[in-house]
Length: 200
Image (tube, rainbow, N blue to C red; front, side, top):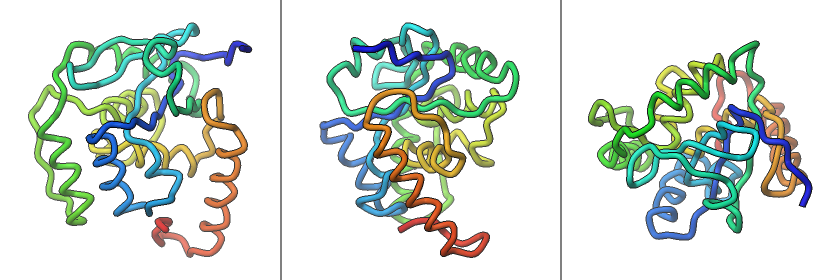
């Protein structure tokens, strides 16, 4: 298999098969639509080396892993944000600083309620992380705009920003699927005036 050419700061999204994975995607579908490119994903992580080592927030907290051991046979995509100079290095440094923090179970509950009730009311415990919030925080530190409350982003929100800003495909699901999603996004933008929702 050809080397996909990972770079530190690349962002991964994955589609799991567990009950919690499905619950996260269901909540995301309430905002983005059941068949949307955004709601396909329930987990996010960041590549930190060229060999595919990664950092992610999971049930045991913020830990190290690798593409080969964690996602070698899974449904995932790796994308490359358009970092400014030294932005990728800053993003990886920020993600590394989060290592060993606890997982934000309370924040997950808050996120689910936010999606289901369409409310901005949120609650969490300081010093705890969810996967997409950790990745979004690191991206923000690296100069990639991820919204004004990026630490509350879901995996679907991360993909939403990726599609809106046409991040580069690196590995995972067929590049044609990403191009199709980008084409769909461009058509939706053309149909909707500035400020209108892009959700299906």
